[in-house]
Image (cartoon, rainbow, N blue to C red; front, side):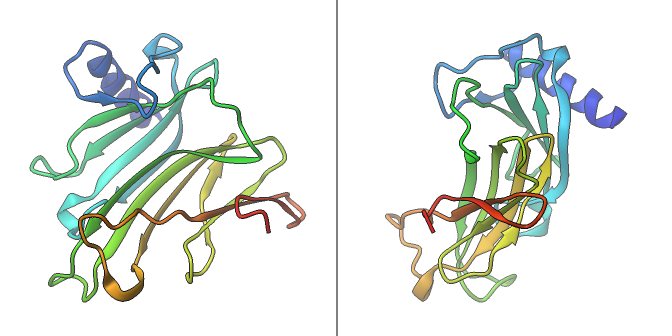
Length: 193
Protein backbone atom coordinates (compact mmCIF):
# COMPACT_ATOMS: atom_id res chain seq x y z
CA UNK A 1 0.00 0.00 0.00
CA UNK A 2 3.03 2.29 0.26
CA UNK A 3 3.12 2.87 -3.52
CA UNK A 4 -0.65 3.39 -3.56
CA UNK A 5 -0.31 6.00 -0.78
CA UNK A 6 2.40 7.83 -2.68
CA UNK A 7 0.41 7.72 -5.96
CA UNK A 8 -2.79 8.85 -4.25
CA UNK A 9 -1.15 11.76 -2.41
CA UNK A 10 0.72 12.91 -5.53
CA UNK A 11 -2.44 12.73 -7.62
CA UNK A 12 -4.58 14.62 -5.07
CA UNK A 13 -1.88 17.28 -4.60
CA UNK A 14 -1.76 17.86 -8.37
CA UNK A 15 -5.55 18.19 -8.48
CA UNK A 16 -5.62 20.59 -5.51
CA UNK A 17 -2.94 22.73 -7.21
CA UNK A 18 -4.91 22.79 -10.48
CA UNK A 19 -2.29 20.80 -12.43
CA UNK A 20 -4.60 17.87 -13.05
CA UNK A 21 -8.28 17.66 -14.03
CA UNK A 22 -10.52 17.13 -11.03
CA UNK A 23 -14.24 16.57 -11.12
CA UNK A 24 -17.07 16.22 -8.70
CA UNK A 25 -20.53 14.75 -9.22
CA UNK A 26 -21.69 17.45 -6.79
CA UNK A 27 -20.21 20.73 -8.04
CA UNK A 28 -19.73 22.08 -4.53
CA UNK A 29 -17.69 19.09 -3.31
CA UNK A 30 -14.15 20.02 -2.32
CA UNK A 31 -11.46 18.24 -0.35
CA UNK A 32 -12.74 17.87 3.21
CA UNK A 33 -9.31 17.28 4.71
CA UNK A 34 -5.68 18.01 3.76
CA UNK A 35 -4.86 15.87 0.71
CA UNK A 36 -2.00 14.12 2.53
CA UNK A 37 -4.46 12.69 5.07
CA UNK A 38 -6.41 10.60 2.52
CA UNK A 39 -5.56 6.89 2.81
CA UNK A 40 -5.96 4.31 0.03
CA UNK A 41 -8.84 1.95 0.75
CA UNK A 42 -9.18 0.14 -2.58
CA UNK A 43 -6.61 -0.19 -5.36
CA UNK A 44 -7.92 -1.79 -8.56
CA UNK A 45 -5.59 -2.27 -11.53
CA UNK A 46 -6.42 -2.87 -15.19
CA UNK A 47 -9.91 -1.37 -15.14
CA UNK A 48 -11.17 -0.01 -18.44
CA UNK A 49 -14.00 2.18 -19.60
CA UNK A 50 -13.41 1.66 -23.31
CA UNK A 51 -13.21 -1.34 -25.61
CA UNK A 52 -9.47 -1.89 -25.84
CA UNK A 53 -6.88 -3.23 -23.45
CA UNK A 54 -4.59 -0.21 -23.92
CA UNK A 55 -7.16 1.92 -22.13
CA UNK A 56 -6.76 0.12 -18.81
CA UNK A 57 -6.15 2.28 -15.74
CA UNK A 58 -5.44 1.82 -12.06
CA UNK A 59 -8.13 3.27 -9.80
CA UNK A 60 -7.20 4.25 -6.25
CA UNK A 61 -10.07 5.06 -3.90
CA UNK A 62 -8.89 7.15 -0.96
CA UNK A 63 -10.78 8.01 2.21
CA UNK A 64 -10.20 11.08 4.37
CA UNK A 65 -10.36 11.17 8.19
CA UNK A 66 -13.86 12.72 7.84
CA UNK A 67 -14.91 9.87 5.51
CA UNK A 68 -14.85 11.73 2.18
CA UNK A 69 -13.90 9.60 -0.82
CA UNK A 70 -11.53 10.77 -3.55
CA UNK A 71 -10.77 8.66 -6.60
CA UNK A 72 -7.52 8.89 -8.53
CA UNK A 73 -7.38 7.33 -12.01
CA UNK A 74 -3.89 6.55 -13.32
CA UNK A 75 -3.61 5.34 -16.93
CA UNK A 76 -1.38 2.35 -17.58
CA UNK A 77 -0.05 3.90 -20.79
CA UNK A 78 0.65 7.54 -21.62
CA UNK A 79 -1.67 7.74 -24.62
CA UNK A 80 -4.62 6.21 -22.79
CA UNK A 81 -8.15 7.45 -23.46
CA UNK A 82 -8.61 7.45 -19.70
CA UNK A 83 -6.22 10.22 -18.68
CA UNK A 84 -4.94 10.92 -15.19
CA UNK A 85 -7.82 12.45 -13.27
CA UNK A 86 -9.30 12.90 -9.80
CA UNK A 87 -12.91 12.55 -8.70
CA UNK A 88 -13.95 14.17 -5.41
CA UNK A 89 -17.10 12.66 -3.92
CA UNK A 90 -19.57 14.49 -1.71
CA UNK A 91 -19.02 13.57 1.94
CA UNK A 92 -22.38 14.98 3.03
CA UNK A 93 -24.42 12.36 1.13
CA UNK A 94 -26.37 10.17 3.56
CA UNK A 95 -25.26 6.54 3.45
CA UNK A 96 -28.00 4.00 2.86
CA UNK A 97 -27.11 0.44 3.68
CA UNK A 98 -25.56 0.49 0.17
CA UNK A 99 -25.19 3.70 -1.83
CA UNK A 100 -23.58 4.39 -5.19
CA UNK A 101 -21.53 7.58 -5.23
CA UNK A 102 -20.06 7.41 -8.69
CA UNK A 103 -20.62 5.53 -11.92
CA UNK A 104 -18.06 6.08 -14.65
CA UNK A 105 -19.55 4.39 -17.66
CA UNK A 106 -18.85 4.46 -21.37
CA UNK A 107 -20.70 2.93 -24.27
CA UNK A 108 -18.45 1.46 -26.91
CA UNK A 109 -19.70 0.02 -30.19
CA UNK A 110 -19.00 -3.44 -31.56
CA UNK A 111 -15.45 -3.77 -32.92
CA UNK A 112 -12.64 -6.30 -33.37
CA UNK A 113 -12.52 -6.93 -29.60
CA UNK A 114 -16.22 -7.66 -29.05
CA UNK A 115 -19.07 -8.58 -31.40
CA UNK A 116 -21.75 -6.51 -29.68
CA UNK A 117 -21.90 -3.03 -28.23
CA UNK A 118 -20.95 -2.88 -24.56
CA UNK A 119 -21.49 -0.54 -21.66
CA UNK A 120 -18.33 -0.57 -19.50
CA UNK A 121 -18.69 0.78 -16.00
CA UNK A 122 -16.68 1.39 -12.85
CA UNK A 123 -18.96 2.04 -9.88
CA UNK A 124 -17.87 3.22 -6.44
CA UNK A 125 -19.96 3.62 -3.31
CA UNK A 126 -20.29 3.14 0.40
CA UNK A 127 -21.78 0.46 2.58
CA UNK A 128 -23.06 0.81 6.12
CA UNK A 129 -21.47 -1.00 9.07
CA UNK A 130 -22.45 -4.65 9.09
CA UNK A 131 -22.60 -4.92 5.29
CA UNK A 132 -19.81 -7.29 4.25
CA UNK A 133 -20.87 -8.09 0.68
CA UNK A 134 -22.16 -5.76 -2.05
CA UNK A 135 -23.42 -6.93 -5.43
CA UNK A 136 -24.34 -5.12 -8.63
CA UNK A 137 -26.81 -6.59 -11.12
CA UNK A 138 -27.89 -5.22 -14.49
CA UNK A 139 -31.29 -6.29 -15.84
CA UNK A 140 -31.10 -9.79 -17.31
CA UNK A 141 -27.53 -10.31 -16.05
CA UNK A 142 -26.10 -12.25 -13.13
CA UNK A 143 -25.40 -10.61 -9.80
CA UNK A 144 -21.71 -9.63 -9.52
CA UNK A 145 -19.69 -9.08 -6.37
CA UNK A 146 -18.05 -5.73 -5.73
CA UNK A 147 -14.79 -5.38 -3.82
CA UNK A 148 -15.72 -4.17 -0.29
CA UNK A 149 -13.18 -2.74 2.17
CA UNK A 150 -13.74 -0.49 5.20
CA UNK A 151 -17.25 0.60 4.17
CA UNK A 152 -16.22 1.39 0.58
CA UNK A 153 -17.02 -0.71 -2.49
CA UNK A 154 -15.88 -0.79 -6.12
CA UNK A 155 -17.40 -2.80 -8.97
CA UNK A 156 -16.19 -3.08 -12.56
CA UNK A 157 -18.38 -4.65 -15.21
CA UNK A 158 -19.37 -4.73 -18.83
CA UNK A 159 -23.00 -4.97 -19.86
CA UNK A 160 -24.41 -5.84 -23.29
CA UNK A 161 -27.50 -3.67 -23.85
CA UNK A 162 -30.69 -5.45 -24.94
CA UNK A 163 -30.92 -5.57 -28.73
CA UNK A 164 -27.42 -4.13 -29.03
CA UNK A 165 -29.02 -0.67 -29.19
CA UNK A 166 -26.61 2.00 -27.96
CA UNK A 167 -27.61 5.06 -29.96
CA UNK A 168 -26.69 8.57 -28.82
CA UNK A 169 -29.78 8.85 -26.63
CA UNK A 170 -29.41 5.39 -25.09
CA UNK A 171 -29.86 5.75 -21.33
CA UNK A 172 -27.18 4.30 -19.11
CA UNK A 173 -28.51 1.18 -17.36
CA UNK A 174 -29.50 1.44 -13.72
CA UNK A 175 -28.29 -1.67 -11.91
CA UNK A 176 -29.75 -3.15 -8.75
CA UNK A 177 -27.45 -2.81 -5.73
CA UNK A 178 -27.67 -5.32 -2.90
CA UNK A 179 -25.97 -5.47 0.48
CA UNK A 180 -25.55 -8.60 2.59
CA UNK A 181 -24.59 -9.28 6.21
CA UNK A 182 -21.72 -11.64 7.02
CA UNK A 183 -24.21 -14.50 7.57
CA UNK A 184 -25.36 -14.11 3.93
CA UNK A 185 -28.71 -12.52 4.79
CA UNK A 186 -29.90 -9.80 2.43
CA UNK A 187 -29.86 -6.44 4.24
CA UNK A 188 -30.69 -4.08 1.38
CA UNK A 189 -31.81 -4.04 -2.26
CA UNK A 190 -32.13 -0.85 -4.29
CA UNK A 191 -34.97 -2.47 -6.22
CA UNK A 192 -36.93 -2.97 -3.01
CA UNK A 193 -37.00 -6.74 -3.52
